[in-house]
Amino acid sequence: MEINVGEIIRLKKPHPCGKENADKWKVLRAGADFRLECVGCGHQVMMKRSLVEKQIVK
Image 1 (cartoon, one colour):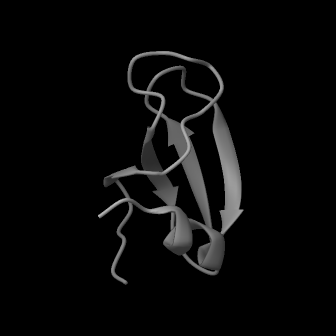
Image 2 (tube, rainbow, N blue to C red; image 1 turned 90 degrees about the vertical axis):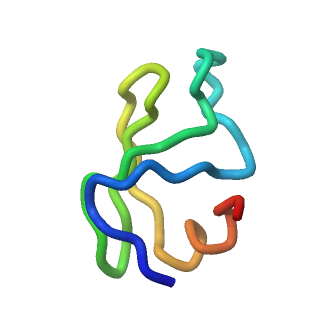
């Protein structure tokens, strides 16, 4: 799966911030793991590649 830095991806589970775009994440770093930023509140998280690939909504 090709995911590049700067893309906005949508995951199955929204961020618990509850904001309008809480299920959308901006990719800040891609590699063996991803650094994602919540579009709703700006919170950043690190996730393993395998977990992100399973959670992406097509």
